[in-house]
Length: 293
DNA sequence: GTCCAGGCTTTCC
DNA sequence: GGAAAGCCTGGA
Image 1 (tube, rainbow, N blue to C red):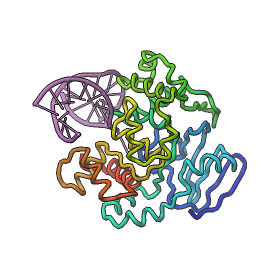
Image 2: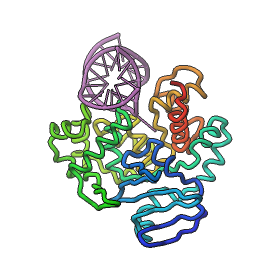
Image 3: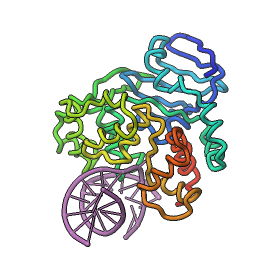
Image 4: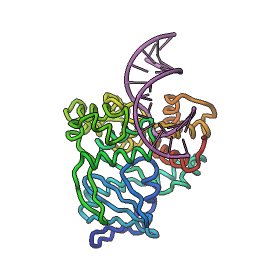
């Protein structure tokens, strides 16, 4: 990454930074905890911090932070150690991805908190993004700790596995509108809190091992585990197949109706180690263009 | 072992 | 009425 860091009061500015567009990053479906503000900036909550992200010309302004938190948290959260120029140069040889990257050129894959990511994607099953965001927000406000205020609004962090393992299932369902996913959320939280699944160990596993481990959790199947692996556990080769990716792969590559299990393999064959990155460009492209619908 | 149908909450079109 | 970043169960 080539950029200069400038520190100001309560602010970090990334000068002349490429491959970084807040809209692409937050609206490509990988994260649910962000709000688009009136000025076009985005406010997000992660790792117990509140952050506002704004693009101004060639610069990115991170507001509500300092040098130490940037180095400890946001550098990794925004995946700034990864060379997206190089990734895009490889993927762009594929004509479909060339188009997709033109639309979502500023996408980066966030490194999000494992527990929150797992639970959020359990909630995402057979659900809609707007509704998922609302449910996650309610759960944070209801069961998570207040961490601060930014521009007059209060922000809460997502609850820990301990906190979420102890909630009343009926109450959770009533207030968060997560429907039939309620038991899955609480049961998975229990298994993680009680150490039946040690999610920290997944960082040192490969994609297949990590998937096997995650799928022991109720509510976690192939799609949800791939999302967690890609968006929290740094597995860039994980290729989550949802309805949109299924459509775009059938439309541009496979040319016929194909079961989800085989689409995962196709992603692997076409994109290999970069499958996860390819998936994000394709997902964003498919949704923005309504391809295959 | 694989594949598939049906059910599951709630919201939005 | 149908679909939505799917998973689970049961049966062939």
